[in-house]
Length: 191
Image 1 (cartoon, helix red, strand yellow):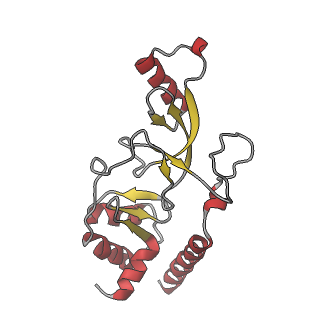
Image 2: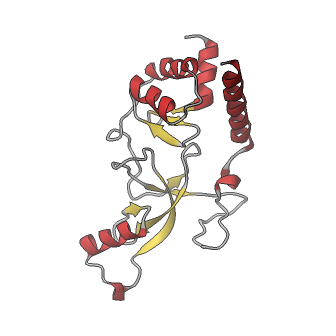
Image 3: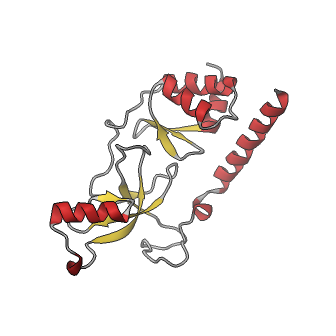
């Protein structure tokens, strides 16, 4: 595999060796391992990627040791520092057991089934910032700390969202995104 192919692949994916996953830089989620799955992701989701780009990504990722959904170790009942490459979502954490969900209905169902929740007890969960590696039915959310500008705590306010995607995107990510778009545009023109 040439250095050029590695550079091309790294424009589209990021490898996280501590979790043994490849993250799609555009989707901000881990890709299922397997050459075919990764290639299909770019073929179906990111249609502007050329066959040469997909081939470079496949060659790069096939040499990596990757975990599947069930093998990725997600933090359980612990809040960890955010993983910059993954999307940050608003979510809920059960105060009784630490179960994490993105949807209020799912959290209410969990509290009802697991903790005999009734409305008169009041809210039994807290708002949190959450992340997940894989966006599918088997996803496992975990809570994350988000600190910026010297702030030492997470904000649960529903007012202005200081953790909006635009403020957490670094200038390097914006530069890489612009580079990706320009490369895709040139490839499209060349075709």
